Every structure is written in C-alpha cells, then in structure tokens.
Image (cartoon, rainbow, N blue to C red; front, side):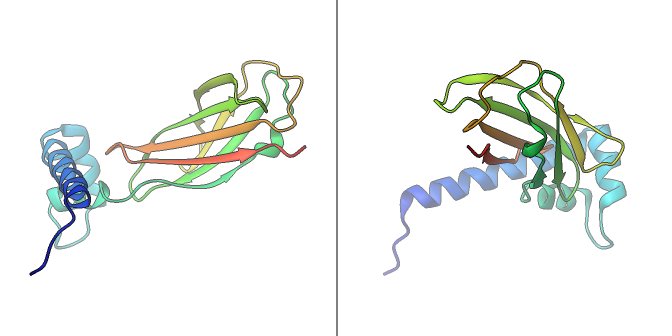
Length: 151
C-alpha cells in the first residue's frame, strides 16, 4: 500500500489552493485581466495564464553590491527577471554583527528588469556587511539573495 507523507502533502495542497485563489481573483480584477490578456499564449485562458504566473518566482540576476561604499545616496543597481512582472524589490543592509543598518525598497528604472536602491544612512564600517535582496512578483512569490561585502 502506498503511503503519503502528511506534512509535505499538506504544504503542496496549501500552495495549490493559494495559487488557485490568486488565479481566480486575478481574472476578476481589471488590471490583472488586462495584463494577462496581453501575456497569454494562444490556447491558454486568462485563468491558466494567471495560474502559471503564480508558479514562477522572480529571479534575482545581479546585484551591484560593489557600488555600496557606505556613503549616503550610494545607488545599488539590481537586475530582476520574472515571467510577468516584478512587483517590488526590497533591500536590507546589516552590519558585520548582524545588526540592522537600514531597509527600504528599490525603485524601477526605465528598463523593466532594472531596479535601483538609494542608500539612506551612512555606514563607516562596510567590511563584512550583508546586503539582502528580496524580490516579489504580483502573486506574492518571493526570492531572496544575500551578498556579503568582502573584508
């Protein structure tokens, strides 16, 4: 007899239900209806297109952590791809001891996959700092990458 491991099954079931709810809500919203109408492939419904979008998380391709010098108004460039669109990119900077220095959201640039974060606080000891980048798409799929500034 075949036995299913309950915790993994429940987790997969939860993800499936969450994705189905997103696709159903997205087909009712005028913004997402228009978005998925433009992106859908021949033979796919709006619901199927939204469901497929909910299965793909954004991909953080590059983070220009070497542009971070610890000065206020430094700009950190980020390149993020998604099958549809990236909703937000959040940057968190920690010092070498793991204490929070700052957190905030990057802004999109003229190119749809490029984002830029402007540093708000000065940091005089950047060696060993950790820069955490979290990208999220419209279905709330998150991808996180962490970069450490070399000593």
